[in-house]
Length: 152
Image (cartoon, rainbow, N blue to C red; front, side):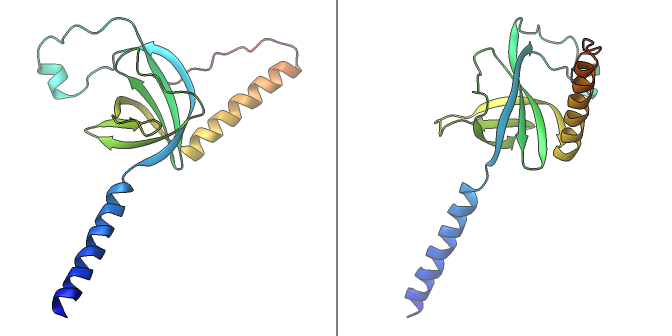
């Protein structure tokens, strides 16, 4: 009887472990994409005193706005071939100060550098303010007097 009880306890514990491992991904939706610089500046002590930096890769890399339940991320790919379809719900997780992204149950994760993070309610307020400004300028018949750009 002890063995059966121990076996049932072991199976329950293992299934709980598998459920926890399956739940490590969070979900988000890609709402914006544009091509930007491939490099994100290094900061901190090692950047200041580490000697000359390696030459940066030239070209442009995709930059995505990923909206999750609580946080909005601006992430940058490491090469120009890291593409994610817009309006796609993706699975992501944090890994080594990066965002590891898995699209459509791909067998590999793509790693993206995190450029910006903002709480979703604050992001929605900014988006609403921009829309109101654009609507007001349209109703007045004037062109939009500003360009929308995220802080760098």
